Image (cartoon, rainbow, N blue to C red; front, side, top):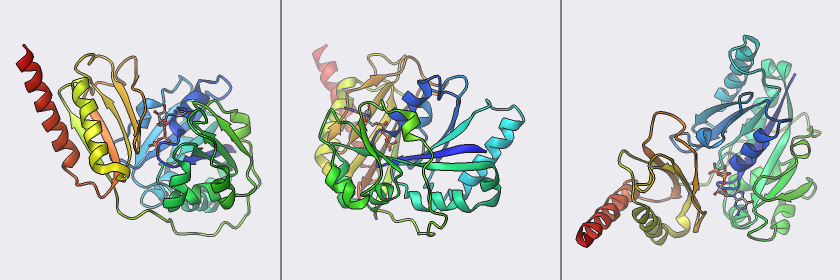
Length: 318
Ligand SMILES: Nc1nc2c(ncn2[C@@H]2O[C@H](COP(=O)(O)OP(=O)(O)OP(=O)(O)O)[C@@H](O)[C@H]2O)c(=O)[nH]1
């Protein structure tokens, strides 16, 4: 039986940061990770730098709705390839749901599929709650509420930025063990320990925030750092709290050989990180935005306008 754990938590809570850290731990490196993202292009796949032994498989779309059957198929297909020696002989599977997934239908699928139940053992649900944004997400988004309600273990992330929103968490889940960890430094043996599970999880329909869309921007030409900064400020001013999440791999004009990793969660822009090299041959900048009622073409048009202005200003200085 292959143990399977589900890692969930609202947009930007720190799921990929945690998994990247877990895979760096030699005792947990032999894990297969299935990443699901809401945006149309997979980025986390490139951001969770896997070791030789581990294996990361990515899908986009809504895991709890559209691609729910895909998950069952992916797990069984992965197992077949493991037996055939086509992928590393992983010892467990960690599923990172998208921040907008309701875990209920996912758990239901994992628990009711016969072929899956014969080969895989569900260990539990680890839910990450962002100390800074968690309380607001729990108040506004049904996905975030379900993620906490169904948690077997709760990990409060970003304790360096704010105190844990314990009252909001306990109102939804009074009993699950709770810890806090900075930058994903949680104990995997605690987080992924098998949890007792009721045999009859109801087949709840997924609950979702209405009106969320994801917008993708792809760029051939590197973007000047100043243009990127002004663009993000402009977006924040225009969209305010309607911009839930922005992440990307960006070729900056100042250093296009290494991609900069961009993260913003609502108004909070995290400091840029850098990858040592591009994950593949594709060196285009790619940015995914998730928001409520943001006009589809607005972000790309704003970026083009800001770039033109920055180019004009620097030409004027020459
Ligand atoms: N200050 C601080 N930042 C953190 C911590 N954990 C994660 N972050 C940052 O939060 C941002 C989002 O982290 P991710 O790991 O990408 O979050 P995620 O849950 O995978 O995001 P989605 O895929 O959009 O759902 C990144 O900039 C991280 O560096 C923490 O403990 N403290």
